[in-house]
Image (cartoon, rainbow, N blue to C red):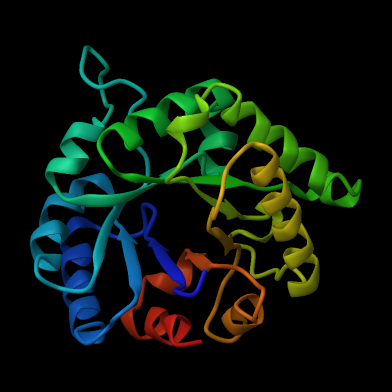
Length: 244
């Protein structure tokens, strides 16, 4: 894929007022940007950030969504409401949600369906933890995660799916995944996607991405973009990554 995709995941790091201030600084930083830059603020800040990003090159994303369209699901966020706020992307199955909230592959598949129904592009996150890495089980773990979610989806329902490879042991730790090994995993994911009937699936990398190492993952034949955590909380820092 020629155009790279950059996604900023602000997680639960900013208060609503801080998110507004940061979003405004992003608009200044990206006012002439021509590519694909997505910002995923916390749910409380989505409405404000959506208004700030209107008529700018920046796209709005969400950090999660409900597996149901409407109903008595206390605390959940409907894809219908995300679409109404002009959200274009949504993270699904981030390692922190898999680990802390025990999200299952069946649940993730339902969330993907909800996103696609509202023309929101789902970004399915996959990756191994430290113990699995030590055992050399990266490929097996990722294969199981991909198959687990895709097995619950119809073949014609995942045309807009993106995959984010995020080695869990590298997220927020400052530890860097060796770019060459990461690219090997990327190729494994691409092959698995092809076997599942998915074509032209963008594969992103996430895991302690910084302005200093971003270019290592974006070499020719490398990843189709980046999912950025801590380094995306500052507009200038994220801008440097996008320009890598």
